[in-house]
Length: 451
Image (cartoon, rainbow, N blue to C red; front, side, top):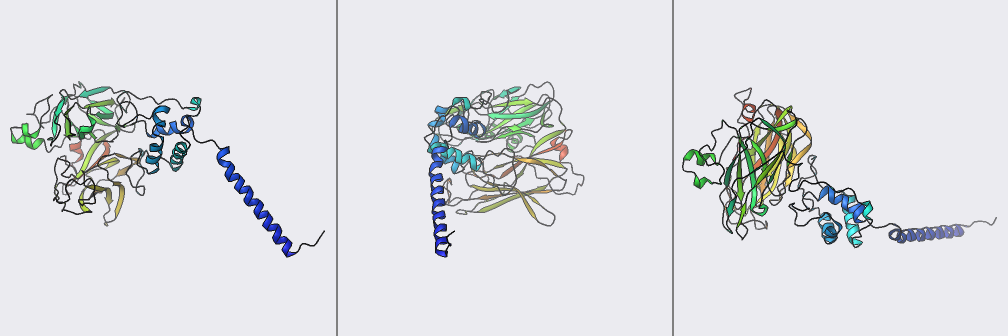
């Protein structure tokens, strides 16, 4: 065997390295030819079904359906771009705080799959690879409602100008008590509905008893002071809050909202105008619980309506806090602000002043979402909850109606609001009023008022 000199050894190493590099180069070049790009039926359609079609289907709030190959192919690049920027599906919770069961966010692998499909000119693939189509109830994102209650008379909306908060009282006609497992609000003119709150008015309630039933009315229509005041404040329980992009209420098994026999629903509607006359006749669909639940769901809120945001302020802080009067299981959150809203936090404040953030929302006025805890959390009586809202009243806020204005609480979108709705489950026999009876009468004021 010939002697292997250092020079020979170095040459062998160099040749081996070159061969390895060429082998790697060959594999890299061969990869795209060997691996087929994602196809619509096998790879893309399952993503659209899971994350997109609840809005992007016939009758949904999305601007175009994404159900068929022909639907999706026309928007392949837009789908990839919006997914890559995480603008769709809409979700605004800071991932550092909390985990939420209704988070529709795409995984990195799903985003990459959509991008590769668009880059490959959106191939269809084999229709036999398609998953079974999702079954949707026409007009609803909940199962077929057991009851659909509609405003009896449509509300005529002008082409421009402000519209006062509009109310309509709708009798339920329920001859017996009902437990509501799911509910969904469906405006007939979505672009005009800024938000809606549907209240439960029990038969023994005196709230708005002088108001007309079955016809729309505003505060300006009220002739007595009690009714005018009642239109702005109530302690009635809330069945559902709706805003653009919000999802239906679907409570876990064993939990439901309660509607006493003979109750009315009071629709509180905030409308905006869009350069053409329109009308709206909003409905609510309800699915009843099949048996009496162990826990009753209440919607409470942390509200601050005494603030003034200075002109030009880009990070103005508004806070509300209060303690829970009794034990409760925390379920979900729904923050509400207007066009200057920037960020909204829900926190637990410890006795030592420590702050635990449960949710931080990078607020988007045009997508007001609910955030449901993946694991409901038991909170003991006396737990202090805090809501903190930040506002951008500067010229840097492209949605700001007037950066030179001092901004206060008000109904219109050029005013502001600070409302932190949150849902809790309590014992089934506790209504909202009894829940706020504190064992210690000296405890501070509870954090629940409705505006």
